[in-house]
Length: 224
Length: 139
Image (cartoon, rainbow over all chains, first blue to last red; front, top):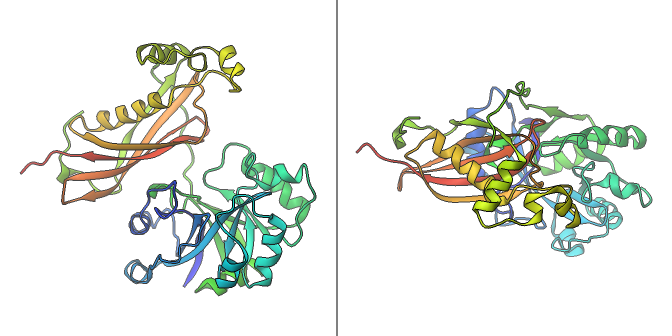
């Protein structure tokens, strides 16, 4: 049973992460009071990690583990949930210039959902591309809260959501063990599997949640 | 700073934060000492001519500061491996905050894996990475 899930993080299956999945789960178990997550969605870069088998870890730690992908398009990075054989036949996830409109439309037709992530980020975020080209059709939601964003990036997304009426979700975008679950998504409905997640992301009834601690006041620091 | 033995650390331990003001003179001094006295590391105009927003700290300097955080935490820790991703140029003349946490203890070789990162006052993580350290044993 899962209502709060981190919808965006990377394990050591991604080329820029060294985080083992079990280390994420152990970290969450220690931090349960601060980050009350019930599920993780592994979104490996430019691939669907079909070989990843996490059933035993789910049982051991009592956390739902789902698999998705982060692909690269001509409108920036996009998370693909509900990846299946038809989607993998239709698109080469290694292609770093996938046509975003086709990804959004075709993934939906083939049973999944594609959602732009960190849209406020320069170059690889949706907003910069919306400034130059027509908006995409069929976008249901965007990652409004990304744990790796810089100052101002998440704020820019609020205006995008206001303008286009997108649903908003959150994810840690963790590449390190200790960052897991800092940002997540809370659902009104129970998510038991990927089908539930895809359906929920389509219809709404979810919101980003922020589990980051307030930053301490900056102290005068010794010079180096 | 006291020696911490393998048995005395726990997964989840946070390394004591190292907060520093990264000065331009400090970066120049590092670049000179490291044989990297190039414009991008020494003056804003030279760096801008290379397309950078201003002079930056060398990547190995950031890695060195992260290694210093580890040795400040435990002077007996031997850094076996350190790997970083540079998410943004490190622009001096500001505070930087070095952070870390023990994420995994490896009983077979008495090593520990740590997350390590450098962030600015706004919490933007400029450099993120991991390190594996060997820790002394009491036995």
